[in-house]
Length: 252
Image (cartoon, rainbow, N blue to C red; front, side, top):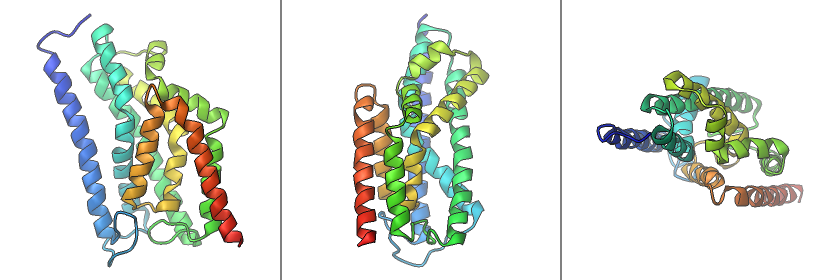
């Protein structure tokens, strides 16, 4: 089955709307960083006008961050679904359903991370900007996330994220609700694949645009069809080495 000429324009509209939301999320994060009184590296540069110690504002910040960082990683999945609109019985409503289901999962992750950040701040483990106050915590997180890159759980979750077409063909569901269910499942696999890069926000600073950009780049590279399987373990090795260096410096 092929697209009718009247349906083709909706593909462009959908993609433009999706990328507009991702761009808006990044601009919103920049505005939040300014309000929090930090530069692009997450360093304090002025008086913060945003309360980074309460759950509600942190939940909003993490939610916008999920849209900005995870939106680009969803592109291969949406492209795979687009192919099924042409070749199978997919629909534009199903495409948007995938988007909604995927980000519903990441919204849940955002709410949980906000609660974790509040708990860490209250215990003194991170400062007001979400940066670890101890080199032992920073080094330990780097090592833990690096080691996770070599685990079976990472391999399973990454396998689904890296080849979404296989998931669609094996668990295909029609319509908007079917797309939402598939998107939620893919979001859960993606969370299992990428949670470590989010946790590293407590190393680089949860309001550091530089860290967000690097983490987004790493996650996008992991999901590229021709490159993904070749970068996961090197990234893990680099994180372990970095973490051990931090721990060694702390010990000295």
